[in-house]
Length: 132
Image (cartoon, rainbow, N blue to C red):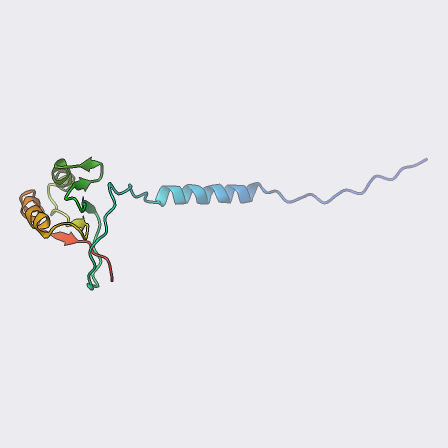
């Protein structure tokens, strides 16, 4: 008795190239993403009708209680930490400092902070506001 060979099944396409592409995209997005550090405390910026966008290289936070924070430094050392980070470049100008102040901060506290920032070497200070 003679048996015929069973018919061969067509070879399935490999999924390995698709997996490689997915991992390459994942690595690309992880390498190019900028992960923003969490804000030190909740700040509700005041409303303004200005159309300018603030550049946010250096952001100094001012809470409604008048507490300062820059990145991981909270308290009186925040201005010094911002100045130290901005002063890393000896030949270039100091970048503008973005002040993210709460809408409920007293104007007296904000006015007292400006000479302190000027003494730290900041010549340009941008106040971050929210659109109405």
